[in-house]
Length: 398
Ligand SMILES: Cc1ncc(COP(=O)(O)O)c(C=O)c1O
Image 1 (cartoon, helix red, strand yellow):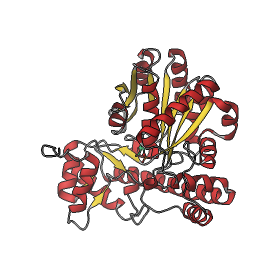
Image 2 (image 1 turned 135 degrees about the vertical axis):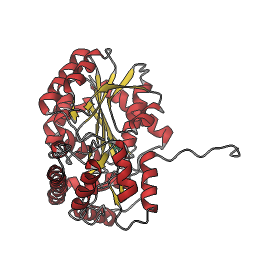
Image 3 (image 1 turned 60 degrees about the vertical axis):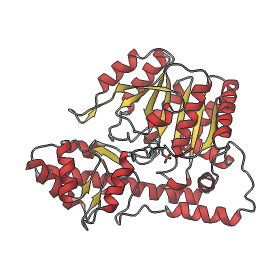
């Protein structure tokens, strides 16, 4: 059976990480990873999350199966955290939430739902988008194509081009949008631009599939949810893939949720039954532990305040590092203006330096970033920032 099987090439991001691990240079710096890191280069457990986990374990009397849709406290709280309590109340039974293995599981379940409706149109994704959107959605049977989004010349969103492309999309197609903290570019649309996008979606009868993997990492929990809240308030049908990996630091626990909004409660119920059926045939039900933690944490006012404070600190630290990198690079060289680094949101941005310079940084200084020039802002620290500024400026002005 397996005599002829060939090993697949490594995932480009994971492959680069392996090369980094093997690099013996003691001064090596990894800006390519996709997780939050603190000043000591660790991905810490939020203290409120640790407490919620302990309390959950202490109170747990059984490991029997949880409800197939997921922990009820998690489902209730995660929808209200993302969409707000009044909006969730207003949507009532038109909204359903199902717990999934991370944001990837949510994206996949959303894709399975689309396929099960007999959807034959296209899913439009931003150019560029998170690389994993393609295999996750295409392997479910969906066909993907791109709309214009990031313009390397202006180092930001070419909103006119984006809108123009959205206006050409055939009625009934699906548009995948990043709820906030666009990965890989860090370039988000403004609230006013969200309003315009939602108007076009309504006019063209397009269905948004909103991927929210970084709520709280951009401008704040509520600010980052502006687009998704407006979409569910204004549009008849919306799909949402939500992840708790980053904002609760629960990466390995695989915690997320797919949310579906349909025109009527009857349709929502039917859509949910298809998601549950897809889950059943793939993995039966989502792992419980992470959702149990989040449900417990958000049910407790004291833990919720503590978690929000910690999340604010994470966000402020990333903003400080962005600012530091932009100012440092602007002062150290005059070839390129890096103001856009300070303007971008969340964990990532494109540094926008020539590809050759990316390779030189790797070969000469053991500074690792993706060839797309995407960097993880959380890979910066107070210690390595001056070194990075010096090295990047040096290769740029060589
Ligand atoms: C844009 C985007 N969507 C979804 C995810 C899914 O994350 P996870 O499955 O780890 O929750 C990620 C993670 O990096 C992401 O960047």
